[in-house]
Length: 518
Image (cartoon, rainbow, N blue to C red; front, side, top):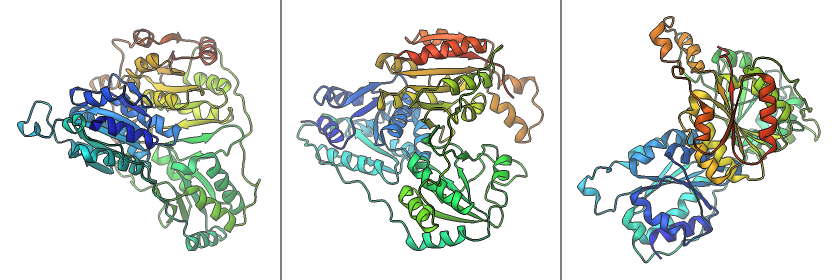
């Protein structure tokens, strides 16, 4: 057994049985070994950013690490943005990067680079397998580290000769880390604070945005009068009818400041203390109100569900005291198509158990409100702010849950970063409906041009934020990659096309031609 065969066998034994990849020469023995370990499913992507984003989406839904295979330093560089998003979302990814043979590296060949330096930007753990005898153990450790807690990106650098050399053996799976225990003294302290007169807020993120954890959080809030808020872009928010609704912190710092105004105690549950996404002249970066004390009930290495349940018990919260979202069916719009009309239709027709990958950006602002009372579903957000995540995350989610409908809400400009995801969706026959919000603009940047205090945009500046001339034809782009596609310009057309797309299996695209809302 060579190193690549032992590596893949070890991954499978550790529960990692899907690898998204864009391989090259240095990874050919890994590719060949897929036939020797049929339990590993290889999924080809035509761009590394699709592979890394798909691994992210898969891991969010499968609740276990995904693996991704990249070609040397340049391949890692191409996949970096979506690994950044995975890192910010605390998503478990085993990132395997092929390298030159150990004896070839001193010759500084054309593709030679410092992979570790590049990987440091997105990885909490980096290991270069230096020998065939060690590669399987390294792989087992990478899976355990990626799984966490805290979940993270673990990068395993794989020299070509380590892969092709014989004499390797698979390694046993390593045990997962034990979550940090709930601090009983802290729970008592926070229960006293919540029972006092000073305004408090629970700020939940990560695993605290799952349905069971939100039940405990809602019981605490309703019992004590505390405000319940979620981070702006949760990794996976379980929401909809029958589940606990939670208000998300606003993207715009001005609105977030209003949401937090007057809070004297901010209790973090698998979330970081809120900060502004960008610096703005004359405005604070730290969104925590002056004089507010920040407490961490459960950090990324903890157990947020256990911590919330312990706090719920300590404050005397009872079963059934949580707030539950009632079913709501939005009224369908008519006439010319708008972003609001698109989101109304999605809210009215979203199927039970759907997974929504949300990179609708400005046009998707109405989506959360119109789907709040839709049948129970999962909402996957742009965790790290690096656009081009929506389609790959939808792809990975569909691989993880082939029995669930995946809806990708996708802004036009961001779609162009990783459009190759459609080819993989077609090849794998994945059940993904993509809704393209086509307003021919990087609309959010038109807003930011003013917010950062830049001078009013002249014709040259505005041209850099406009993506027309030529107009993008997403129907042609999708069909060119094997995905059926339609275009809607009225609310009635979109409703008809969305209903048809939801009713059938397999990938489809609806290009919604809309005006910009900014």
